[in-house]
Length: 430
Ligand SMILES: C[S@@+](CC[C@H](N)C(=O)[O-])C[C@H]1O[C@@H](n2cnc3c(N)ncnc32)[C@H](O)[C@@H]1O
Image (tube, rainbow, N blue to C red; front, top):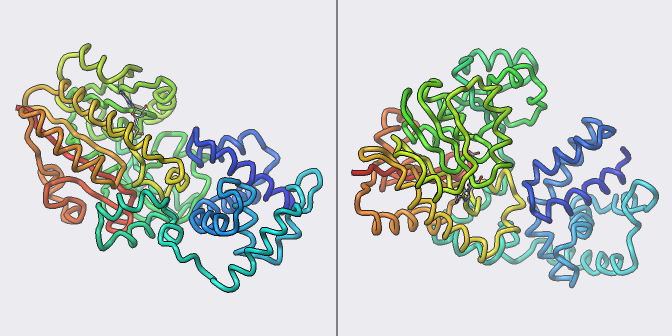
């Protein structure tokens, strides 16, 4: 593909990502699956162009607002991005023709000229939200959660995330997998927090490897691996994964249970559960049964179980490194809806636990409103539950002490732990 054709593809991808139906990485993979003519070099370059825009969107939007341009136009995002990164090439990318983007219009030319003089005189935006790539209204949620370290957290959330693997201990060990992958040219180091993880800072086509096809690993952030271990699932137990989605945590739980016992994987949306089927098969797991059902219905259908995991839908503010676009898709209304759903799931999950069993509430959010405040409100209305410290499960691993806060919650973040941001609280029913 020519450089202009790559730019045209990036604009198309950014438009699809803006619509927000699927995460950016899923949209990009699907886009290339249908365009086999794009070689690996094209894919890498186009992906890079898209992520440079997404990681600088605050700055790009700032300049567009300042110049009266449409801050929601993906074509303008790319024009400004090129203007900031490689202004000398702008004219050679936007040349029109069959495969390239349309030539710069008269209105765009005026906007570019205006911006060039602004950028030359001002250099950087003077707005905190733009520099931290965080929508203005969301800043206060981070300020509340992190106080003095807020800007450091937001900067870490805007960095590139590593590639983490969860080794499937039902089939191999991490040392064996590490050496196998090294032999195939994929260099991974052992993760420092998770005892079942491998990490690389470089993306490589791992899903084509025999090791992946044989189910020796899953791609999963280190924080999610720790989160799954907080459930404390034991071989032979009966567990409900109430928001199983595509099965990331479900599979980790099955592995921790040595594939003995029973996991009921539920989700309100069948299409999400369906995505887990090939993963379950690859992993060689046989203890998972799936139910496409709302949590309230499941709570009335089955007998209480030993442990329930609620991996609740949330703002996703902890995974902005991997999904930089979601910060711009979140609205106050959506956040409010998440909080209502979390409350309902918390209540439904509590009904599914047997006396003496554990309920684990988790999110990939960093906001107090979706974490600590949900826990406080749950404890006020559910007097038959007591908080259990995550130390009870993770306490013998010294490396993990930085992941457990004074209240005994698991709380990990990119700046503090070099992982995605997650939260989990454990409760025992009595
Ligand atoms: C954070 S995602 C789960 C991710 C998954 N556990 C994993 O590790 O890959 C939250 C899931 O909750 C599901 N969900 C939302 N409301 C629900 C409800 N009332 N009952 C059951 N599942 C629900 C969503 O469909 C979504 O798949």
